Amino acid sequence: MIAPDLLDLLWQGLGETAYMVGVATLLSGAGGLLIGVLLVLTDRGGLLAAPPLNTLLGLIVNIGRSLPFIILLVAIIPFTRAVVGTTIGTTAAIVPLTVSAIPFYARIVETAIREVGRDVVDAARAMGASRRQIIAKVLLREARPGLVAGLTITVVALIGYSAMAGVVGGGGLGDLALRYGYQRFEDDLMVGTVVLLIVVVQIVQMLGDRIARRLSHR
Amino acid sequence: MIRIEGLRKTFHTQGGPVTAVDGVDLTVAEGQVFGVVGRSGAGKSTLLRCVNLLERPDEGRVTVDGVELSALREDRLRRARRGIGMIHQHFALLDSRTAAGNVSFALEVMGVPRRERAARVDELLDLVGLTDRAGAYPTQLSGGQKQRVGIARALASRPRVLLSDEATSALDPDTTGAILSLLRGLTRRLGLTILLITHEMDVVKRLCDAVAVMREGRFVESGPVVKLINQPGSQLARDIFPLGPVPTVPGHALFDVTLAGPAGDAAFVSGLTRRHDLDVRIVAGAVEQLAATRAGRLRIALPQTAPGLADALRELRTAGLGVEPAR
Image (cartoon, rainbow over all chains, first blue to last red; front, side):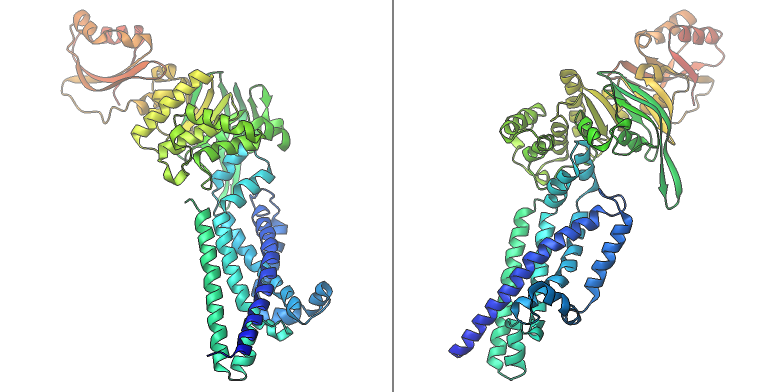
């Protein structure tokens, strides 16, 4: 049996995780989408072909992808301070979470959009579609199932990363499991947290799968 | 309706430059169906993509319906492309939209208001005989149905010119026949001018008024179907009416006789017998009703030593038939 104050802790942790992951998802979703689209458009033979820009963008994304999250968390502390005015707390944790998830999602977006056939883009061009129409009505719309599936993966990854947010006092479920459960040997709380995380991840994955399936007519 | 002058396009690949189109001139008259045939890699596809400037030619001019497309900037070109429909080998439909949605897409691109779209979509689906499948997604459609959607979509802007990129190559023979009939009917009803590329001789037979044979980026033969078939040594005639390997018939000489146009209707076999006392054996042959004319080729064996042979051959040639030693 879990004591009532432990339930409170779990509830609070869940709220913090939801807040961090929710906001980080919104921001990195938008940022990743933008950069992912740019990665496709600026590529050689793309609609806005600019190979040097593409190479630069790819390099930045790769750097973002290769930094371990815990290092990134610390490394961008000055940036975090500049953005949210503080370097500790739940809100402060959102900044590194977002920064690390943007390149992650950007690559997924890029892959999803590349799945859209070249012939469909040609067909749209032949109809006299503008670049904007092709991006919105062909590339993004046709890639929707992949974009949603990718966002699901990103949310789950963010839930995982958010466990490390404790380093900057971010709180959340992962932090709870680490500090109370692991470091203070409170097994029931650790188990409770882990179970809760599993349930949350499961729900996110199921929801994501369901939406992706509904959008897919393949 | 379509005029192409001195078209050249070279691709710079890792294996060095590849000249896909190497100086092509082409004129398609209004209402004409013009086919470009050739093996894959002959440059047909690039040629077609140069017509609506999906591919920008390195040299040469492309004029469609009096507008020199190759001189237009991107924004003007976009508008001009709406007057040119295009259908594709693999249909190129949007998987995320229904049949009706795919047709509607073309109207959206043109900025047709939502209210007018629905009625026009119905009209277009009706035109291609697909009204009952309006709500189906591409994966739920057969190949032939997908191409019907493709055709409806291509006609959405009421184009006067249609470009067809191997439109039936991914379809089975029956479906190909149905799609070709549909296209044939549409050209008449809507007064369309069609430029198509294909490697299927059936398409040439059933649809084309004029044809060009393309090889290594150049036209090696080009003109009205009847004229090309009649041309001595025509590759097109041999491709359309293949007669197989030449057999040996002891004591006989073998000739390939080409029939096309009015001359083809003459009763030449009995004529040879009556006037030149020749026994005529038919070794191989194919005669068909084409879109443009009835035409065919017959491989006949005539007695080698018959005295009337030379006169007979001369008579056939005078009558307008193509006669060549079989090969």
